[in-house]
Length: 326
Length: 282
Image (tube, rainbow over all chains, first blue to last red):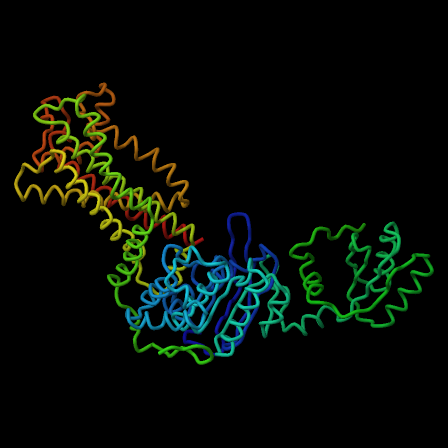
């Protein structure tokens, strides 16, 4: 594929990256169609940042290849850099420069003439509600302001593809909502966006397409609805009265559904995705009654994205206990 | 032309050639380095107050105790303080490189379509200019306390030229140090331990003849000695004459210093570029 391919803004094939003994990426394949928003979702250490670094020419893959707007990240790095904007995990604005100086410098490094760079900086500062703080050093900015400036900085070049690595991590809820609004705005303009996040609600809120990665592999992809469907739709949930019977309940649920359930000791609950619908509920109810296990709750419910995530990765970003049955 | 919300900010591609050359990109980065110096009180004081302090402290405290054949100690001292300031250029460079790593400016620059070598080139230009300021301040301060350029104009120009040449070499030592160490704290620690003895085991503050024999040998081959001595020779300031038993560097300080400057650039610049590239390609 030597020529630029306009269909896919991002195309990654079998990307592998190792750091010494650790495999950060174990062969990742995905595409981002031009003009769409894709979220790469995964826990800490899943390989999200590594993938972004390779796609933005900051790191070289050990195996595989990637193209941005048809240009190879290794062979045509400079063409790639002309077309991308990157907001790294920590805002990388220069603390000793003012907001305006930061944007002008980046404009000049994007080869604008100084005057054009200055005009563009002013327009972006205005748009990101930073006009009043424009002549203050960014070391005095709040976290939300710094993120907004960082985002403005990535737009200096009017990029075709924008990479945002955990754009809202560390922001308070208000700053987060503000940033989401800015991102909506970008998406409306037709910018292709690839963002990484640990937050399911963020992925669901912003992205057309979600790629779930864990341990350096893509383990699922699709829109939020498809992901929910893929893990079996309904979940069966049993909450037992006595913690001591939790294991019995888990064994019973496993027999009924044929799947290993997830046990939450704190909540005294056993949860499993099911495909048999109400039948499983009836079977479980009978079984529990026969074994004399008292229950607080026995229910079917639609999974939340959190549960989808748990089912796919086997662990939650901030989970403590897992696989503690048997 | 103000754009508030909604419409895309006007396309400005016509204002944007694909590349404006390595000199342009280098200068943009260099300007940033100069703004940094202006806004960092400690960096600014390193470049302004510190040289004055050294001239005054060493000049007046040691001035009476240390005798220099053929002239006053304060005149002798100036060459040493020039040399020390130039060697410490490496420290400033290493610190700014390490800060770039810390603030992830390195990543930001690398994701931009800028000319290869412009980032390090910008650091080099900025730091070369940063070196000029303390040299000028020290010269003025020296003149006020009794130092003077006694030689001819050509020699004087050669003296300042040699300082800048050596400063240029030290910049690459700094890039190497900053890229290998990677943190400002590490640079401060290591820089002090490496550079400080280097500038003291030399004819910087005292004539080499006053040192014990072992140290004397080290000092005689230390390029900081010959840098300081070269400056003294070119400005025709007092310096102990080279004796028949002295090694080659003492007899040919300027040549020896230039060989070191060239050698440092030839060895350190490629290593520094590689260390820098490698530390960002993680």
